[in-house]
Every structure is written in structure tokens, then in C-alpha cells.
Length: 119
Image (tube, rainbow, N blue to C red; front, side, top):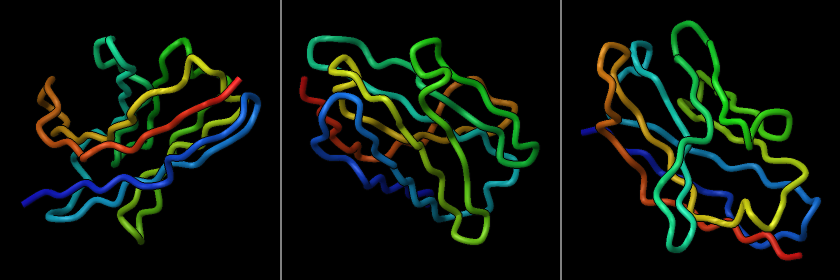
């Protein structure tokens, strides 16, 4: 049973930073793609960033480029999202997700962690 548990959300002022964590368990993730998504009130869930666990390749949304960094700790089976220069429009529930490398859809999702950026 794959389990993804996010943590690290909170309230921060505009211009501040937060680091989100996603602890993954239940299997070996070497053939998985891990991603971060977010959903703001009244909006659809949107892609933020992803990386391929075995190759380490990364991808970011335009809004995340230059401000957010996705990374991993293999020993801890944990993925991180370092968010800098936060803006009020970054306010959302952030979710981590996982999918097999060959599959387009994310099969596994965490419960989400709230990020609120005040102006």
C-alpha cells in the first residue's frame, strides 16, 4: 500500500519561504515519477513540479520556475518542495503524488498541506 504524507505547510508573509515534505512508503519508488500539485479555493488542481526518481530529471510549471525547487532524499524516501519568494497567489492546498514512469496519470496522492501566503 503506497502512502504519501505531506508536511511543512503553514502561514507565511509574502516574500518568505517554506519547505514542504512528502514522506513516501509502501514500495520502492525507483521507477516512479513524483510530483507536487496545488489547488486554490475555487480553482482546479494544477501541476507545480515533478521529478523522476531514477533519473533525477525535473520539470516545473511556469509559476514555479526560478522560485521553487523539488528535491529528494533517497535514504529517507522523502521528496521536498522548497518554495522561495512566495506570493499571495501561491496560497493553496499542496499535494504530493506518485505515478509509475510509464503511466500518464498519478495513481497515489497525499492528503494535502495548506500553504497560506499573506500580503
